[in-house]
Image 1 (cartoon, helix red, strand yellow):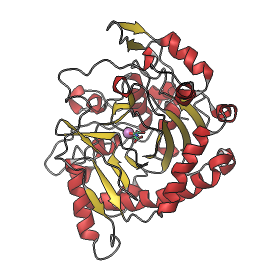
Image 2 (image 1 turned 30 degrees about the vertical axis):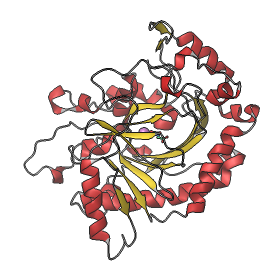
Image 3 (image 1 turned 120 degrees about the vertical axis):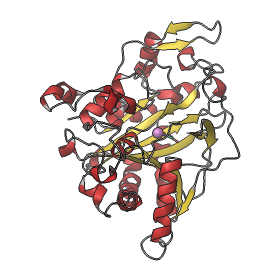
Length: 396
Ligand code: OGA
Ligand code: NI
């Protein structure tokens, strides 16, 4: 079965190049990464060993001149905050309008009064923290590259891309069609995962209706095309980093999902690219962060925008976050998703149809997490492949 984000994280690429901070050269770090991977201790294991300098395969080259100025953030821009209070009654129209504006202009927004109790969110983040802080030998039982494992622990997005490693460990849960046997959850966070999943699924459904309306479609449009039925819950742990200016917690990327709901703790470090400037996404007590994914941008013909974001490494840690990625149901892995016809009055479609298997295959093959949407532009002239053409993708 095709993997979603959680399982894709464990794919291996052949070569990785890192930047040597001592002499500015580029070296092939694949062997060093492999050795680190085999420790199965994650970045936390490394950080706990008390090192003062980070290994060079974590070092990212200085940012290119055409990119926005380094890690500073523009303080005059503020990510929209939407209050969901009354969204099922008196304030629905306002909430729908705010979601439309934010999805068109920013591609992400913070939500308050979304209905998930604060203790459920706090307990979830605590659960992620406990998982990563438990004795290494217990944690490593979940350390795997097997794409079929639906609960897994992995680190540093290692060997995934040609990019240097990142200062982050992850525990991931693959709820295919919303289902995952709780017996598979690590005991140390079993209840928290189940409880948070139930709530975030409800929030996902509410958002699918609100986004449908924000597009001027009937309320159940997005649920009727089953594009948000599978969820990957991904719990990140960003240890304190002795040289945060040399690496990243998460490198610049857009999410390949239809939609992502992110829960972050109060440490900060998340930034979003807006009007070619990096803008901090400040932690907001009790809030959830919602961002549009690449596939949503595709089916809305660029009306709603997926957005590039990243997480800075921090001198103080750990920072904990929990991302919920929404994808189509497994029965729809090979179902074509193209631009929604109802949105195409005069416009021509910018993108051709694609299916999840092809889209994810393309995303993984680029060796970088920058959006692959341009590959699906109509002008690139390729038709949506048939199921037979992509049988080989079933094994990723
Ligand atoms: C992600 C992501 C941000 C964070 O997992 O795709 O962007 O705050 N995470 O961890
Ligand atoms: Ni992301």
